[in-house]
Length: 134
Image 1: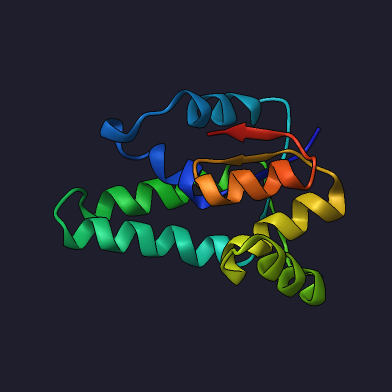
Image 2: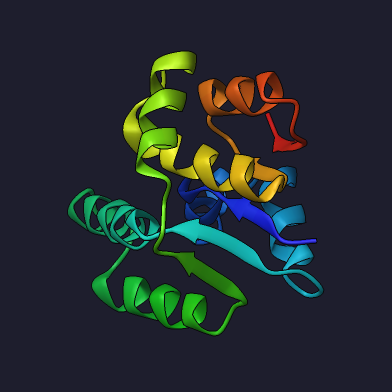
């Protein structure tokens, strides 16, 4: 069954000091399943990488390797959010619109969510959807 993949999970895959059993489980789940992400995920991942480059945690070449690896994974970008639902979910659960974009996909597809974001995990559970994470 496809699942929604949050950037917080993806980010841990490159940083050994941020390992997490949920993140590891999400990676292993990609062997048989497909992840779905909002289009903003691509920008969020790049932002996480460039911020960590600036902090000296990784080199630009390592960022390039991760981005290349991500293109090989069964991650589908959802380019058709329900914009009204995104706003409604953000208001209902006190989320940013960015986080609500992930929740929008989970709600529309009745899909589980993999996240390490506590507020997003609470919103997923409030929507009575499975949460793979915190």
